[in-house]
Length: 93
Image 1 (cartoon, rainbow, N blue to C red):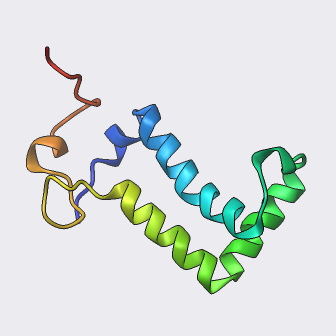
Image 2 (tube, rainbow, N blue to C red; image 1 turned 45 degrees about the horizontal axis):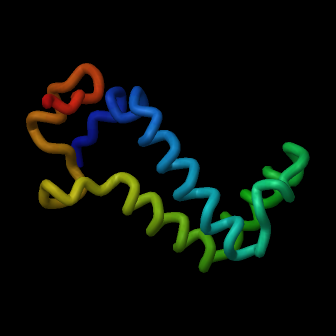
């Protein structure tokens, strides 16, 4: 499995996908909104509770898989072309 992590983390959309892949299952399972997380302690408690719960942890793994997967190639790897990128490719018009 080869993924061009350096380029992916230069893309703000990818970072947002990862945050949502972790946060959405946690908030949904525990019936919370982002407004309920008013201290770092509450955030860390929520994350610990989610990791400790096999069902929630499984949902987070599935969400992360969906955020990482590129449906244009087989498997979880990036394409050979994408592995050569130094920064995210811009759409040509």
